[in-house]
Image 1 (cartoon, rainbow, N blue to C red):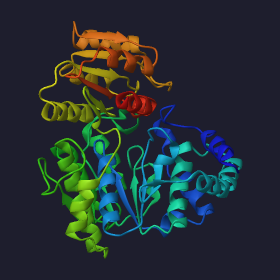
Image 2: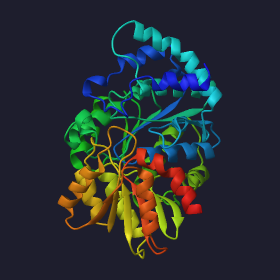
Image 3: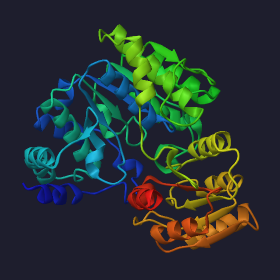
Image 4: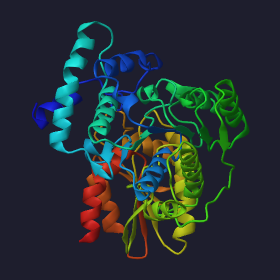
Length: 420
């Protein structure tokens, strides 16, 4: 296949990032069958498996960077991507290349077609991406791969791996249609990545879901290391926000388990890795006058962390505005309420995904949760950004947030206009 043919094949599969998955869509048998046809590449690379509602991407980035600083060749599998699908699959910080992607899709396409010809549901976009990641890590002879769960954990396609350590970051309400309506139900799904006798690091702090993780670990005879609320690390962290201390504590604990499993990692590598970690669009400072922040707060915990971080990091800014769009399957009423407690004006829009909430509906929600709050609606993210940027003075703050899809659409435009 050419690169274009490979991309067309990949995107031709059902994509639950466009059409939200239903509980019946989440199962592991199809993923395991696909990998068997490919020679079980997931069994040929050591892995760290990470799930959670808040902080799992940042924690993955920290672990990967620490291991790179320790001299390992490190694969990193994350989702969704911001601008380019190749961002999901990286080795030592470099995205899978176009020729590599085309070669790997060419290799796995016959297995996909064979499964689809045998009947049953078709192989999904995310399942192909997961298989692609494991294949790439094998071909690049990675020493270890850090693998982020896509949705939940128990039935996520990444849960076929057999990790050296499992990590559950903090748990909050998100994807309730698929995972459950309580923190305990969601924790049960997240804790599904815990494997028999495999060490687990838990960053879950609330009593109910924390007990769920404890119980699951005990049932699996999995050694459990818990990270308490307010935990900090004695290192500089290259990501903005007090909440990153908790994520860093989870990452450091995971690295300690890797040491115990026979992977030497020095204290200097930990310090250097945490100081140099970068994770785009997570309270990312794009400009300074005005302050411009690119973020992806798409659930209640991340919205709370965003507001808290902005208050602490930028206490003297004047007008605070937000370019906001969000998916309909998120708790967007609660997210809007949290953001309205900080931002003075909203520029409401939607991105190019059918799951996006229409800006007019967001306006009605804003009027209900924060009567009198200034806002305008815009059909396209670029229009919302242009309006927000035009109204801002050098003393103001503009934040783009609400979804990875929004950040992805605006990243290049925001960066270029800020630099200009």
